Image 1 (tube, rainbow, N blue to C red):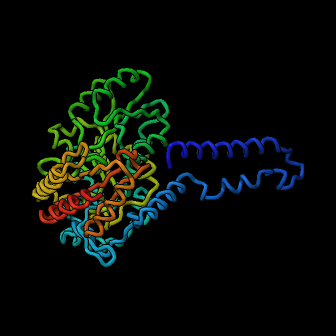
Image 2 (image 1 turned 120 degrees about the horizontal axis):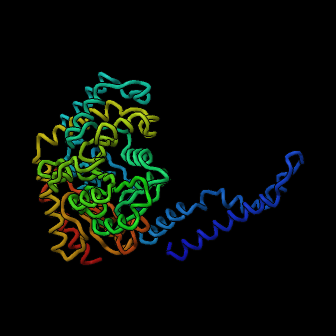
Length: 447
């Protein structure tokens, strides 16, 4: 759907909503007067249209993508069903593939030690803690995981949530409100944007990784707000690049702000031993006020966490809705995350090999004269094609060649930024990467 069509659709829906509202006001009647349904709702046809889920703009976008796929003669690249564990390789239907479509960066989701820890936790504690931790109580594995996460950041404490997305939403909504400002990188994850919306705080963004632009915005606007929260990511999942953490620490100090770093894609990926952005940038972890991360990438589980000072963690533990009103982390989620965190620190070669693999893929794609944007070759390598149709077709052709990589299409990104996105694992072998590069060379020369 082009911009003109999207605007026309929005205008049409808005006009329909206004017509309904006007009709309701026009038909307003004292409560003691009997009025038929038709008198209250004269625009029955319009009402049917606005209550039909097919009229939702989101659904129309989905339909548009399906139509695009049909016109190109390709099957949907989304929701493909894996028939076994999806690591560096997987099985889709009856086809074995080299897999670049998962976040198991350190290959720990199938590690025997992680699996054993999971089995033992289930045998002893069952499959659920059944309620929120404030109601149902703690289990030893909750505190053990949180202490080890806190140790990674040299922080007072940490708190584990059942969802990474909800971690950001709930934390941000808890910490700031209508008198405050949230200012974030323009490429920040959706969970931060949703958290800002829920909080009621004013929201601004600055150009990607531009600490100088952030400094200017704060110079112009800081004095209008009580508290200011600056949010960046440690490793950006669309582009595979990183921020200069020291610069952002300097800016947040100058303007007396909180700095929050989302480490979803950087723990286990960045730094000599995989401890994340602070190790990669050689910045003391205490210089960042709020460390956020997920358990679902390098830690081979599911959930999220916050690490920081005791006052921060206590506030979230007792008051953050996404923690307080949600079931506690299940045994089969906490135990593997903790064991994976231990293996991460015991075996830094996994991070080293991951970087080597990513650099091999990045350098190879660039040698083909293809656009990898600002990727630094840590674990995420985009291949920017500039066309949703081209990205979808190349993904389809690669799958036929035994390589699974997902396209990122408009409107998830601007049309000029449509791409394939390769997620690399330490388990990928050099010959698998070379095979992928050979397929890319052949397919892009005939695309």
